Image 1 (tube, helix red, strand yellow):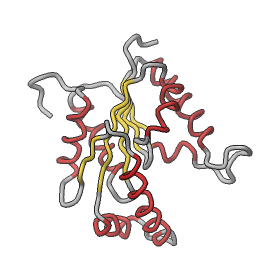
Image 2 (tube, rainbow, N blue to C red; image 1 turned 180 degrees about the vertical axis):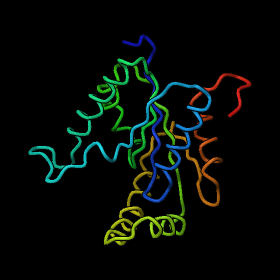
Image 3 (cartoon, one colour; image 1 turned 90 degrees about the horizontal axis):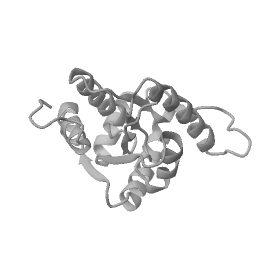
Image 4 (cartoon, helix red, strand yellow; image 1 turned 30 degrees about the vertical axis):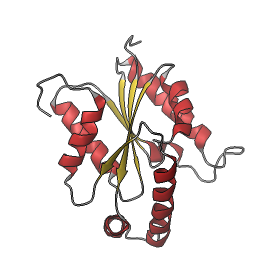
Length: 184
């Protein structure tokens, strides 16, 4: 097992804020710099229907899957995780990361923000099936929830009118995973 303290970069935000895209750009930049890490798209960890008995929000199965994945990553020597999920930055998720990654995990929170217009434009390009109206409504609801309940240590990173590279640079700056003078 890796003796280094586990660290997790949580990238949260409303639907259409760019979490997954920014997460992959962050991962690509870390790979290019030779910085070991794992990346997990948290939305997929609890995708089961119907929900398990006694777990209507699929939070227990999400945690079980994250714990299993992290055990495998840690066995390979990893101690850094990039994790994307809409509400991952909320303080109520910290206990899950403590249990899954280990006590004393360093949690870095980046909340990607986007205006309604930006979110709708991105969702309209992405949701080509029957889910668009539901996604737009859910995105607006989650934006309000995140704005009101993100803990004070959450960095808000605006995405409107910015490139993925610019956004990822801001997110990476939060981590301290770069050596001084290294190219970002």
